[in-house]
Length: 463
Image (cartoon, rainbow, N blue to C red; front, side, top):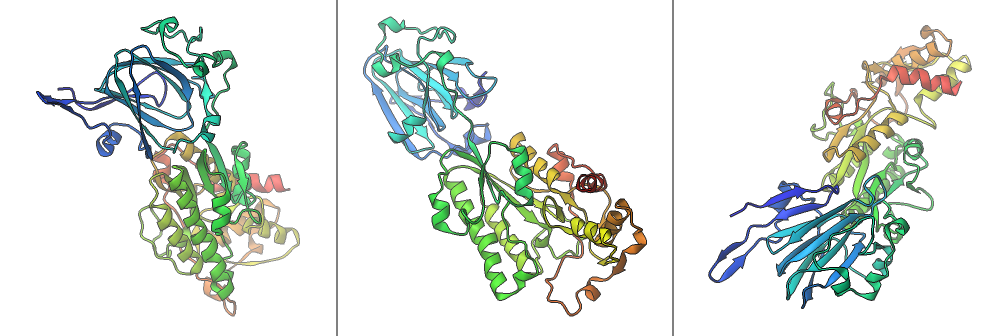
């Protein structure tokens, strides 16, 4: 008896499944959908929500080509069919064709945007469809169609189309030259106007942009009103980051709303629509006692901001499809430590900066590039540390670098302890060590440049 197998085809994502039939003199039994076994062999965990059955009484019934805005697993309960599939997704594979004969012992996984067509070869054929969207008449407006007789695809139908049973609608579909390709799933950037959001916009020019005040992810009604259907990736670059204000009663509520309630709402819609959620985390989920933080270190936040980020991380970690990107000391297009030091240098000020907090800068251009790499390269889902590379520094070291690069003396920056700097101030506790281990990120194929090189470029552009 053949074993269960999942085989690729020349169309990316179109998979053929060999289904063992367990039979005796009474008939046969098969596992038509077995999530654990099939996903282990490479079938996507596509999350079916509807099961439909179709019956064709006679041989020669031919339907298609229909490219649908969802994934589906097609199999037979009885009969045999000739199946043909054409890639109608935008891209280099547009127009590629694959054909397979199907019986009860064969199934095909058809990804979104690949057009399918079936011709019955036996009377009394029964199809079974598992799909991961609920069918509706409105959804058919999103279909893309191809004519069964298209000359460029040139499918070798076992029963000539002139002798087949074809609906008037299918007979009227356009030739390949006139087909509208199905566009890829959409990407949404939440927090699009922040430092990271602006860097992401430059790398994801077609993304949909959401931010306050029009879109508040902590408001359930606002989140539910958005059209999430057709969204493949949600990048959550929104966060409450006023670390010191978060320790106040009002700030605490606002921080929890944005960093926990808002994240919970995005997790809910990502799960419902099988979207990948990319969420930005922080070194503040740790207490900083470890000198180097790995992705699997347990949470130990010191203050309210860190507590909310840890809670958000725990929520995101429950999603099957997620990238949790942990970063630190972010520098981008907006108010930040480097800009403040450069302004002080230009004004002739001699600041005093803490020299007992350790970490690495993260420039938003590289943070955004790493996010795009992870979400677009097929890297395994999970948590990744992402900062710039290079030696570990203190804030005082970085301030002195800024002064030197802008023409001032390094000696113009004084050093102090965190305890002395915060004396008499209402300040949130901060981790002593914020350095993140980048080994897992490198294993995923992304190695960010040294922070020192990016700092020099940043100050040159600003000059």
